[in-house]
Length: 343
Image (cartoon, rainbow, N blue to C red; front, top):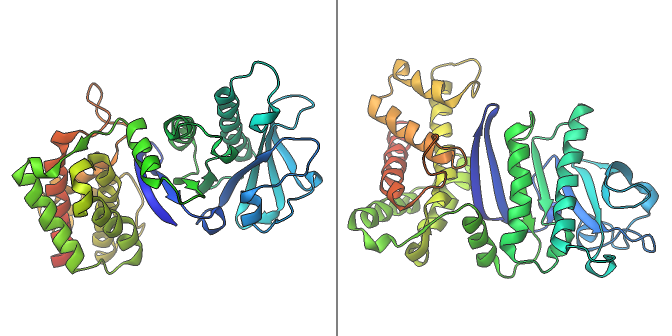
């Protein structure tokens, strides 16, 4: 799976991540996958997503168990596929573009479909079925909408669920087709209100970006998960061909994960019993007791705050902007050096 873009959210129940990926939904690292198919009574559920899950001819409707239906005596809604448990599979049945009756706003139908998906997840939680990692196709075969409209709908519902639900840590929105990926990644930036910044316009920023990239190129992280979630995304963002339109927010989530990884390693080295437990703010605050220098503590706090792109201080900009970039790059570089030299 190829990561195209990310957003981080700090919630009362911990840090949550929303990712835009490209690949097959069958390859998703998830506890629950969400796919869509038509809501026609004349044909069995079918489509590219079902084919990728091993149903080349589609499947019989009676194999689906209703969870959340939108209209009485209609098929539109969400269904579980009980025969698939690892991961569990939720199917959205939604009318095709050619099957909408009357003067119907197609985008409104799409939005109702997305609402039905997350309503179903809430209903399943009430049955004590919670899912930490959810991967969803973009639903409805993309339906020819502008990517910004599609992502606006899907991200709105995913964000609300991540903020308020007990279980989830991550939601992945998966694009099956490999075309126009830059357009989709940019659309997510635009939905989030992220500004584009030319790194070459500031000598200090350019020097920080060069040094950070050089160190990441010279030495990979020894932890494969940290390398995948921190090293690879930062190298992609800071690649020379990307620097004329760098989106500051694309560095925020890798930075936050780097901060969490440093804190985890320090705790592990000092025998903390409940590793990773508790609010990250207080976990960082107690690091001086383990011999961590105060200046490193401040850089870790900076990465913690930058990574919470969705909920910044009241009265301040919610999206990271160009003037945040020097501080973010400086903190990334200092924490990276601490990882290399100390951990």
